[in-house]
Image (tube, rainbow, N blue to C red; front, side):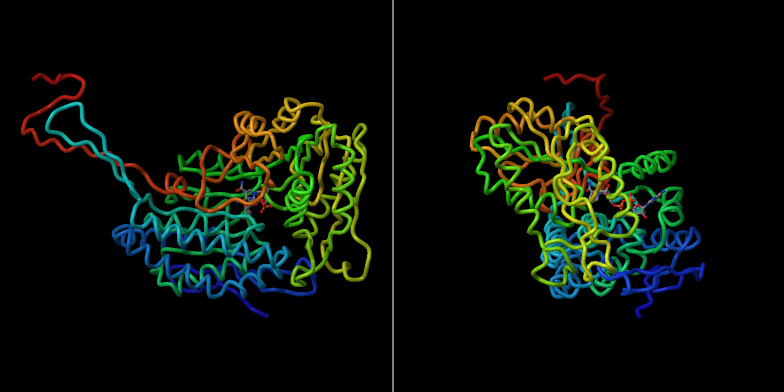
Length: 497
Ligand code: NAD
């Protein structure tokens, strides 16, 4: 069995605590993937020291040179794509098709960062005074704390680490305790690609110890966090006290609208993929299905029939469509929401709601595809993020009501509408309250070169992905160059011919 270490200042080192934790396969809990150090604030201290030291050098490396290292990492990820995808399926359960996609997103993000290394543009603007230039440039900030969840073990750390280091920052990375092995592979690739010592450091351990130590550390300039809204709120409070820059990508409760004129076959594939892909454990998962009354009965029957056929099992089997939930606590949470749903006024459990029966499911955290109909927006199953294969279905009378139901949540990440009416599609794009809108496509499927993030309780206004992530990891510097040879006072001196 593999024993892993922290990576600090270019060396793989034990935690000062000597404590360990196990990483197990959620589809077969007898399989231990690896043993990891359960680190504490002292380990974080060492990692921050190393990152601070490295920053002095790294910020001076020309951006295109940093880009070359990132490109090398992209190539190594590409070479090792299949191996890492298989490890990811064993480590967190999603099916191979999806874990390959997860690694691909890391590859795409790294290549995009490489391209950005020849841009990272500043702006300039005309000055209000003669013989004076006004321009701007982006600068790195220092040491960033990177805290990530387990559901995209390569993609999410890649969204953060590649742009952070490309921009000239150094990082201390704390991955989720459910997916430390994938995180370690990513760091090994960065090491092999030639990232200098101290630029990327990884410290394994819990949110309450390692995570908190990052939030409270005075030498950390920013925290880039993806995870639940509850933890995000805590992070904003604690790291906010230190006036750190804080980027939060949080939960979702995403809706798919199916209008009376929709292509129902297409909408069916969309909702099955959106609701049950990654066992419903995506921030962009479709957890609310909003159907126009004219096609309600027909479409709901189609969804239930198709969902019944979903093959559940170990994601390494290419014929399996849905793997297990991540861990016992998550399965208990899903079970709890099924009970809540059953007891909510008028909601009806029409599919699933339980652990699948059979020997092959006995050692994994499996759960059936689950559907509630007759749901209304005030119910808890309509409002709270369940993070499992549970779909709540709503019947609406009109386009306006569909939009109202879709918007009636505290989250605002992704959304979708299926319609053949261009006017309705355009109106939906205007009126939906979410960071991402899909037309005739499911709520999942973001592309790495476009901004990603949400409104309301889904975040605090930042967008990862594409060019916008560089707004997070850089600071603007404004430069005025006066070549008039005299004192010119902005707002006081006026230009005269
Ligand atoms: P989580 O919030 O429980 O944990 C996320 C990370 O935060 C983990 O590394 C955890 O150890 C750490 N953490 C926990 N408490 C902490 C604390 N007090 N201080 C510092 N760090 C702490 O989330 P999770 O269960 O790993 O992931 C699922 C959640 O992530 C869902 O809510 C999902 O919607 C969200 N998510 C959002 C996006 C997005 O881009 N918006 C993407 C994926 C997942």
